[in-house]
Length: 511
Image 1: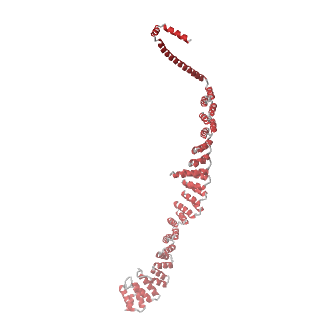
Image 2 (image 1 turned 180 degrees about the vertical axis):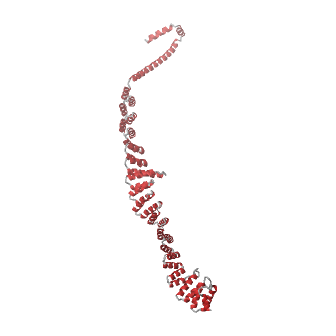
Image 3 (image 1 turned 45 degrees about the vertical axis):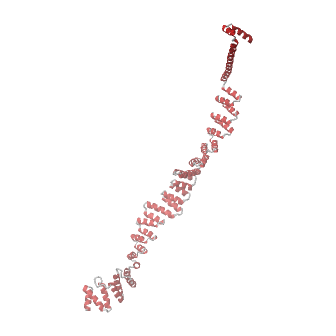
């Protein structure tokens, strides 16, 4: 059939003048060969285009078919063909969550299933997948999303995220556990607040104490933390610790009360004193057995109040005798001041205070203790204590005064002894010997009286100051029949004062 067709074609071509000319020239076979080659090339091109058109038509048909299928069926088809991941995505698009999860499970990837569920906010289902996969890392997030803080906190704690774990325990209402974690992490302030909220007063107090000390290390003064710790220690019945923290928080009154309730009376007394609660301070010091400190506290209080007499009495009770004396003096209670000075051995000051108070005898005795014998003698003499006065004059070396007093008392022998002790350098040497001479003459000791009178004049001539002495001397000389010595003396006196006593008669008679 093909051959017949070809022959017919050649016959047709020969009818064409151009072709018949070529044939006659002998080139027809060659031309036909070339035409055949070109024809074959174009035929093959046509076949190629036809094949591609057929393939495109097939694909287009498939797309049309897919476009016409619902995604659910497409997903089902993909799942059946084992393309689980693509199937899961299509299931996800149409909201077929369980089918999507099934696909992921077929992939043996519960974590991927969980993540898919988590992204869809299906937290409970995601939790189930993560538990199946035993992935705590993923489980933690969905637990938090569901406010399951207690289990989430345990996972965070296992991961070493202590601060986050503590916050989770707090949100779970497990305040004590949260506080313990913050405490171990040195977050003492946070721990204290949580312990307090959990009703653990003692642990809260200890945490706030550590918070206070921690801040102090960094030069931060936080007295409010100390006071808070003190309140909580007190609430928990730890009075001693409460007192310590109140003191650090500059709350001396509260600290004192806490120490007092703990039986720490010495510490309580010191803090009551700092808080200016003097009576309580004194009472605590007494309870501690420190009666001296108790008295001194009241003394300072009374002094500050201007009650000097009571202040003095308390100072004296508190063994601060010097301060007591000063207070008594300031209160013009000189006798009491004197007693205090005497206790301290301040005899001269004591004597002066006794003298101011009008207690002359006591003043004299204090001057005597102070070695002020002259003043003591004068005061003894003023109150009629002659013998004591004499003793003082004698000790002080005032032999003339002693001799004169002894003579007044009729104690002749002692008077003579005292007067004989008066030295020539003494300004009262003349008076002493004149008195001595008189005493000796009165007692018939004439030779000794002559010597005393002669010592009194000390070779001074008769004059206004020596006239009495010379007259007595002349009388004794005359009585001793020593007229040659007596007569010139009487004459000398007469020449100076003719009217002196009986010298006129004596000179006339003797002449």
